[in-house]
Image 1 (cartoon, chains in turn cyan, green):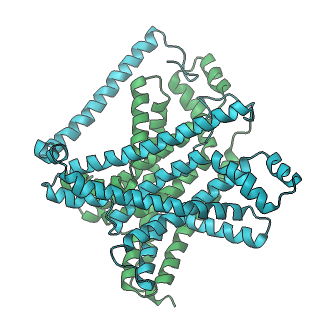
Image 2 (cartoon, rainbow over the protein chains, first blue to last red; image 1 turned 90 degrees about the vertical axis):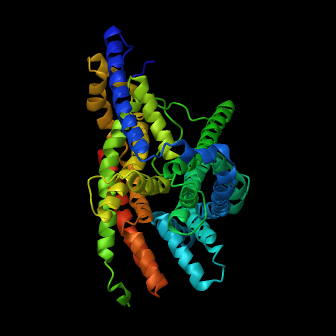
Image 3 (tube, chains in turn red, purple; image 1 turned 135 degrees about the vertical axis):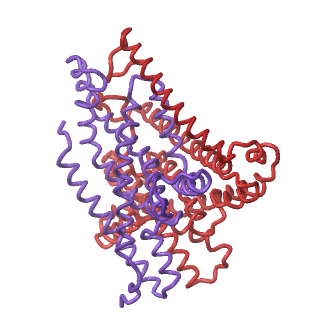
Length: 299
Length: 221
C-alpha cells in the first residue's frame, strides 16, 4: 500500500518496515506480558472468575440485561425529547427577531458550557426538593433531564449548521412561491437540514449512550456500569472479567451506531451525487477528504 | 447572601479541576500525536493498532474507563502509579484515564488536520528526498497543527467538562464539592449557579482565546 506521504517501497524500505514491525511487536508483547503477569498474579485470569459468563445465563439475566435495558431506555428518552427541543432552539437562533434569537443563543451556549454530570446532579436535587417523584424513579428522571438539556443544545447547533449548509436558492425559491417564513422553515429548510445532518445526529446518540454511565457511577441509576459492583461481589471478586464483559457490550452497541452513521453518510452522499447537486471542485488533499470534518465536539 | 460558601474550599476544588485538565491535556496531546503518526505510517501493523485503539476507546464511556482505573487497576491489581496517599493515587489514575480517553479524539482531530494539507506539499517534500518521518515532522504536522487549533480547542473544552467524571472515583474536584454542598446546605439554586458560573468561566475564555489563535495561525490557501 502506498500513500502520498511515502514512496512505493523499495527493498531497503521494506526491510526497514519489517524491522519496525518486529520492534513494535516486541514492545506490544512486553506490555501484554506485563498485563498478563499482573492479572495472573492476582488470580484474575482463573477460569472460575470467567466461568459464570459462559456456563450460566444467571449473570446475564440478573445483572447485565436489566442494566442494558436501563441504559437504552434512558438514551432513547433523552434522544426523543432532545431532538424536537434541539430543532426548536436551532431554528430559534436563526430567527429574524432579536428577542427570539438572543435568548435562544444564550440558552444553547449556557448548557453547552456546563458538564452533563453537573446538570444531572442539579436535576436530581431539584426533583427531590420540589417534586414528589418517588425515590426509585428519580435517578432515571435526573439522568434523562441532564442528557436532554445538554444534548438539545448540541443538536440545536447541528440543526443550525445543517440549515447554513443548504444552498441559498432553497429559501429564495420558497419565498418566490409565496411561502411564509414559518412555512419555508418547516416544509423546505428543516427537512433538508435534518436529512443532511442525520449522520451527525446518530453520532450524537453514541455520546448519549456513553453519558448514561454517569448516572450509574455518581447517582444510583441502575444501568449497565452500576451492575459491575454487585456482579463482582456475587461471583468472587471477578472485577476484571466483569469490566471486560461490560466494556464489550458498550463497544458493540456504540460500534453498531457508529457503523450505521457512516453508512448513512455514504448513502446520503451517493444519493446527492445522483441528483448532481454535490458541490464540486474541492481541492485534492493528503488522505481522503471527509464530508464531516471531525471538529472534536463528539467527545 | 453567600454565607453558605464559608467552610468550603471552592477555589481549591476548581484548582483541582484545572490541574486535572492541564495534566490530561498534555498527556493526551503527546499520546494522540503519536497515535496520529502511527495511523498514517507506512508500517501496516502500526496503522492497525492506531485504528483499533481509536475505535475501541471512542466507543467506551469515559466513566467506565475511569471507574475501571480505580476498581480494576488500583483495587484489584494494586497499580499505584508511584503515589502512596489514596488521594494522590486517585488523582493520578484519573489523569491517566482522561489522557488515554482524550488521546483518541486528539488523534482523530489531527488526522482530519492532515487531510487539509494539499497533496503538493507532501509530493514536493518527497521530491526533495525527505523520509517519511521528515515529511511528517517538517512539512505535514506543522501545517496540520495550525489547521486543527479550533477542533483541538473543542477537545480541550470537552476535557475540562469531562474532568467532573473523576468525582466517580473520589477526586475532590468541583462536581464532588457541589454534590457535598447540595446535600448539606439549603441554597440549591445559588449553589448550582455558583458552580455553573465556575465552569462557564473555565470553558468560555478557552473557546474565545483559541478561536482567535486559530484565525491567527491558519494557513492561508
